[in-house]
Length: 489
Image (cartoon, rainbow, N blue to C red; front, side, top):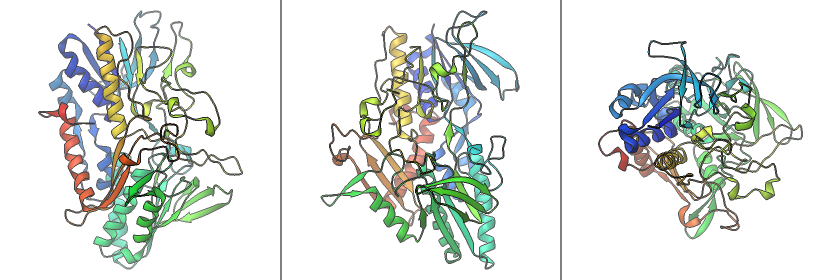
């Protein structure tokens, strides 16, 4: 009997563990280790953050779902990996510390035959002074929509701000990224336009000054170097697409910005040209940068070998080309295909937990040496596809395959994104975009790096309906309802 341990139960981890158990049945064990008791459909947190959904509509309890499928669920955080075993344990193992199940604080050793790192990111609020509280959590100066609880708090602050506006107080809103190395511009993009939509509904839009602040060098970069959309026989850039939305909604923008410090009502920033400034605000939501969760790794003798299997940012090294080389020499082939660790073939990483070989957007920095560029997004659809591909490879390896059998390179996959710009059954809108491939391949697609036949975008009510359908469809799938395996990633 083989045991597969999955660290994390987000989109990628939940996909890997549930498919593995479905395929392997009772002949093999699947263990999920996650500090969370609930699964969260994160794309809908932005609707919680404006009061259009409640927390209960975007989360569900993991324990009964895993019990139904026969997955061994441990509500605990992974602390360290011991891929060679140790003095008291021959098999490779991880150490965990319980955060729930009436075992809070208890430690345990969990052995494995195969290990999937799906821990996702640490929300590194403290990378920006004042964005965090100095203890690794969200600080008091801004709000967040990164978790369902954050989004609930964000809505409380938003509704209080709207009430003040109804009494005649003008307010400044600042939404975007809170550091020069952030990713997830898409979540902030959705949130700023949902706020704009809610202010219109409340009749106080004229009392608001709304500004976007981002580390993108141009609007519509989104951490993938932008894209070109086929429209009317022409290739229109995502920059034009994005700028038209901002202009139409009267949302100002400040780009190429690294937020260096946050104080009550003030965000200090540095721009790509080296100049600095301060943006004042009454309400701010700034996405934090991501980092690895801080897992340690030790060899059989107990010596620290973290740097051997993890990149400096804390994400796990996989089958990517991590050679340092100029931007002009980056290629699509640098990106991983199997997500297998090169040193230990029974360890994989999926979703945000794998270390990308380099940026997708062009690297940039200010004259002061401050990096100001989006880091690669690895969430949503790519996370699910990667999680399933790794699960298929491990199933085949358990059944006798000598190496991973399935590939899921982001340079060979397309992705669809439906970004809400305001919720409403008959007046909601969303920008629906597809891109192929996610990582541009300039050798295969000279000039733009992507296939225009599969890269397009539209905005309107139909996009909103799609976003709403996806919300219900993926919650249905994640709860393992009848036919869940037939719903695509």
